[in-house]
Length: 234
Image 1 (cartoon, one colour):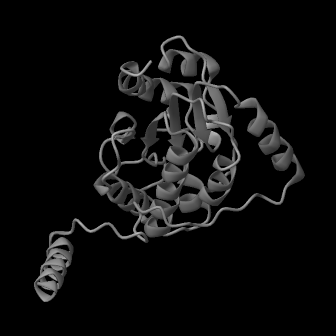
Image 2 (image 1 turned 30 degrees about the vertical axis):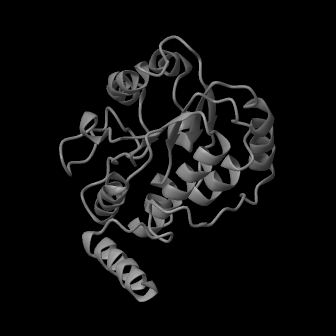
Image 3 (image 1 turned 45 degrees about the vertical axis):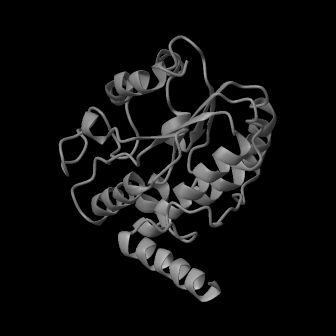
């Protein structure tokens, strides 16, 4: 009987691998630890420490790099149906910086969290899609750990205003990996790229003047989709 049980268990493992339903702890969706480091910059350190305390008790939190930090307050409030979210974005942050900061933010009472990161890793530091997807996956798992009651809105890496090339391909591959992840019911993947550009075409200059950061018009383009996604949870 023991040998039969062992054989059945082995068959289950083989079938699981064959169907692709086995979740590796080292995949982009897994909870495996990735780089988590602060920046060697006194001004950044002061800002990061301040955010650690200011997020305490916040119900609505936005976490990310400059694309989050630069979001106009009035547009942010409209996304959250008149409620002002706490903006915990810091320009220049990589996924390693964001993973470090998430573990120190007081987000225990958060009900809704948006996360947007990865652009700096891909566009500025030539990170691979695999690295970017793992870093984002790690951030999502940290958010679930530190804010267990929150709905997490994971925003796909936004397209850029750069001509189609390796960066565009890396962003697409990263988002494809994240789209395939089987997140739990509290994680919502939002790909807003179609609101900014068609296919692999660069984002128009009016929406992304420096080819990386959104203009006010750019934020207005993605506002309706974000507002619809969050509306059921506000």
